[in-house]
Length: 330
Image (cartoon, rainbow, N blue to C red; front, side, top):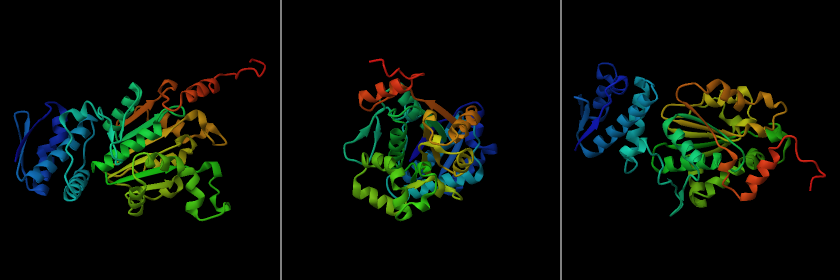
């Protein structure tokens, strides 16, 4: 099999191929394919599966180049190792050329038979595009705008397509003041109420028995934020929900869990913090610090993006009024 891919002619070409085409040499040595760049094109030849895997690796390099990010030797080796594992576990997914410009245009395919999750507004589509194009996406907006639901759907879709090997769903448990030891039951029983919304989203996309199997094998984890300390997560999509309830130090701890070939999505509503001092919210602090950092996308969903019952939008609008309506107004 022989494949030809167009190469950009600016600095992105150097980012993709590497200095003295070092990245291409690594791909050649690791995958056993013939790969060379000439006259604005990249040619790959060899056994079908190896060429398909090499194409995926090149696409990942192109994605990094689009973000003006240089891939280190170790990161490239990790991408190749991940691609090889996915190839050995079944048919390897290859993105079509249109994926970079129109991600998820046909919706998000999930495990539940015949179910496709569709964005319902232009800003929701923008949210999915941001996730596709960036390794860290921060999405804010009021209740019911699909911040969490679309993030989970993206994770399930990427898991199904073998673009990631794990899906990690995280929530802070500040409603209990993090003093979980005073509650009855096991630790899992104590934190389960705070993780329930994430599980509800999963049940819309995956059969119950399959969820149990994926969680038993740690392919899917639903965990409280405190359990993330000390971990490094590679080949994963990691979602932090209700991020307005994190402190600054907790947010820093979470963001530094990002490993090679992974993506993070942070969602929350800055107006709904349960912290005693809302000004200490890690979400608000992260938005201020990271808004102009390369590789980070920030998306704001509005009341018009609410996709729950139509009454939810009216409730949000009324509660957003300052000052609230007088009790005698009726």
